[in-house]
Image (cartoon, rainbow, N blue to C red; front, side, top):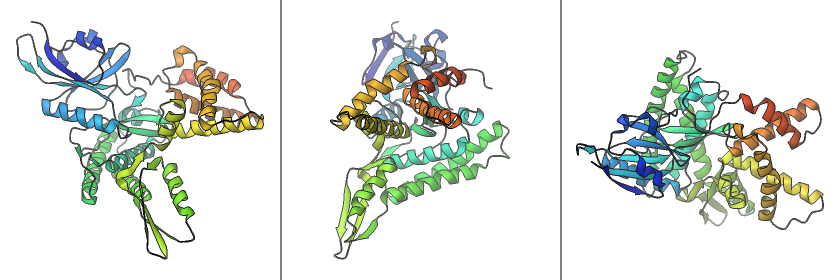
Length: 410
């Protein structure tokens, strides 16, 4: 019999109609699948490539599939890093007419790394503090939107390089709950659950790697929770200042921007002798530099990558000013930088090396490499010279991370 199913999706390529939806995912032929590295899941997960794009397919019960699809869709609109939902394939039946579980379809997160890869291989140096910082930031971002995760774990998270640090992406929201705002009790409960999950999971992986004696799982969980508390306090704590310190408002906004957040609403109360200033938690959004870079250039980057690229745009503007060129606007400068600096640099990388790093991360690493070469040569190295050395001596040895195609472990 012909395959019977129903697809609800935001956008969908016609190639999805050719997939064998009348079979359980675990029975799909290898010809329809691609092997990508991933974390542990309680459900059957498979990956496909449709029209040159990679997607993750997860087989789960109907209520969970629809709920996770809607929750992920909500998070996309908040700027919180999460995988992109594509659709739900339901009402599936096999050749005998037996009902099959629905499949949640999400876009595969390119250039992402499961935590096991980061801990097991020399992908980044000192991965534990970077993982802890990234997870703390993700939890804060979720809680600011009123989202209760309920199952924070390393397996439910993917990580991307972000200009020397890591950015954490939410992958699994089966236990998530969306509220207008979270109470302190809800935040604490979510943090307690995170502590238990992270400590257990970190110890389990350390044992598998034969490094249980070297890595303290409770120290890792403590680092995530303390990082969360510190960041939450920095973002939401009330500040008191005198009547002669009105510039504190401007400084407070800049402090939030430096942390990578933006306040959509501030609350100021006056007692006559002093002011009390606080950011309204429900109106604090993550990704300040990402949104600014996207607005100026159309480039979608991680937060710290965006910060680095914006700094290079500022340096480019200073170069134009020193050359007595007229600077019309910030948008015009960013457009010139994009066409004169960024795009020619990225396009000069040999095509076979493009999958090594995301474009923004590649540009960041190139700037770092130029600084290293300049220090070693005791002179200013130009971008073109640094690019030649980077493409010849650094990038070829790097692992291809665009799709993390499954390969033998080191």
